[in-house]
Image (cartoon, rainbow, N blue to C red; front, side, top):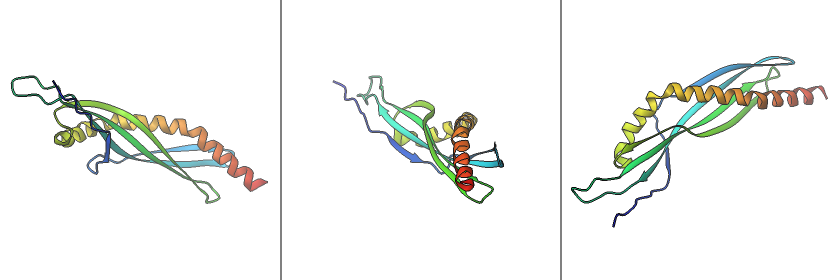
Length: 146
């Protein structure tokens, strides 16, 4: 009888992972506002499969997901700060044979090699956030005029 190992998701921010930033400019009635999206990457691990006795193929592997935690900051012409926290899970995913604890460095290296894909996700997230930022700017302008 095999024992299925199912450890819960464990997320850790790895300082070895590259910091990703994206800048964009959003236009509105009172001029353009520069927005900066600073991103931290965390990796969640899930152990699946089973360790077996010698001579029997093992099914033990680590399934991982890279998640992004983005902080948007923008400063309105009036000096008001417009910030927002956004998270997106599973921007890149993969798996590796063996134990999660033993493969963390290799997994972090795999994620680091896929920084371009992660950056593309941050850019897409910034595009989605543009309407939210526009609404915040409109509210701020309405409060100043009213």
